[in-house]
Image (tube, rainbow over all chains, first blue to last red; front, side, top):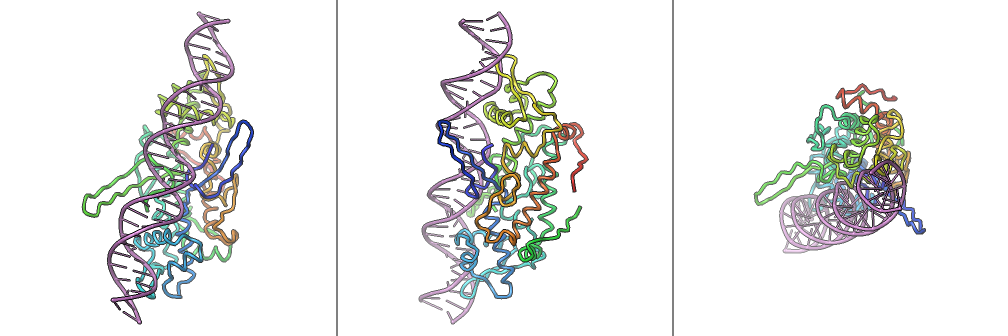
Length: 179
Length: 179
DNA sequence: GCTTAGTATACTTGATTTGTAGAGTTTATA
DNA sequence: TATAAACTCTACAAATCAAGTATACTAAGC
């Protein structure tokens, strides 16, 4: 094994031996990109400052330690998908469009990172056939990954911004998923 | 949104408008790399041909449509982690080391792709702190992603090669996860 | 009209995935 | 014991992607 799926610069555990067999072992991982993480942080921030009028990108960027220009793209994306609304010019800024209990983590992540499914052939929102697959009905990988997709979607599509707000204060949560 | 996590060359849904606002929309996704997919396909193949003696890399590569030299690396990796065993020289090849019900999808994927967790801070097998995170105990993202990690691990660590074999013939499965 | 603040798009950089290439090692057997 | 069959090991290369920068534009207030 060398590294996982995405991550990149995330957390790296680098371990180097300077023996003749110099070997670099490092772990990276992902699934949740930084972009998506920033998006969620931004949404939580905006939710917490809901009744203070529009929030400036600049403010959000500095308070949450998100690169300003990168954040611009993210907020724009969330705006274009109807999650946020914005106001231009002086006194402008960003605010939530929908109510916090209508904004689901699943839809945010789909918007920012794409489908939740680990493989395209089990995606409900963006299905596409795997070409490796000879027969989809007897593909064991597909069956397992479908379980995974459903489990992920079940959590993320049933967790709202409201839930996240509770978590960030409680630090804990009592989930109520559909089984 | 542009693309998800990994995927790359996987399946691409490309849609191009040649208007003045030429726009290319494409979806890619992942989590399960091709490498991991190949590994699972190889394991299933080896399981199905268990009592025919060692299987040649060449045979496996052609039958499962996996690039030969790429497959070599994967099999070697699986061998070094104790999942497979090999025999060199004439009459050699690869075969399963453990029994099919001891080989779990979770450990195969961890070996090939790395930790299952969507973010490092919720990984049980390869924990590492997120530096974005001010306070881990009140990080809502962490709480949600922990649920996701547990759900994924619960499925993958409780699905064995034996289960996959059943699926690939039945095309269906009655899971029996720990709740 | 000038400043504030968001909008839009293109580009850059470094890392990762997905392979390829080639030389080396072990084993069977003729 | 030489030879061919197979696996082993390491390095390299191309394509893709995540993450971030740069630059120019548009709209709203004052």
